[in-house]
Length: 155
Image 1 (cartoon, rainbow, N blue to C red):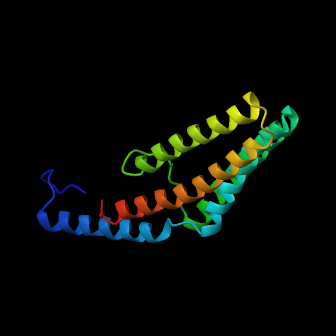
Image 2: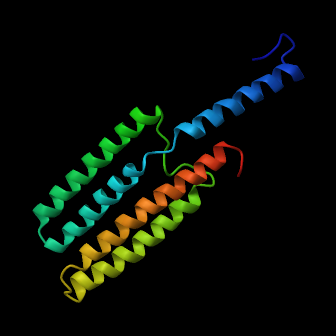
């Protein structure tokens, strides 16, 4: 990348920047997951949180194992489809979506757990799980749109 003088001439630099821009555009077209990826992610999270309504440690533990295996499977599937893996907690504009996710998760699970365990409203965790499952599917889509816009230089 360096010329013999330790610096790059303007033509070479412009060509390198253009190539990087083309690579980012190609990546932006490749990283969007299919709609069912978000739906499966939501179902996995909803199923796990809903398992708390059983009040059975074995069921909850089994649901946790299924959640972790399902997440690992989704990661592998995403890599196979797109050829890359992007950490959802990466720094940058996508942090907005991550912060919204954490707030929604904490609020909904907190309220659902209060109803389920303190007020003994059976099934509250199922409702909370469904709300959080839908939220993660929607936020996952939003996160992807932010990431694609970032790759395309729109942010």
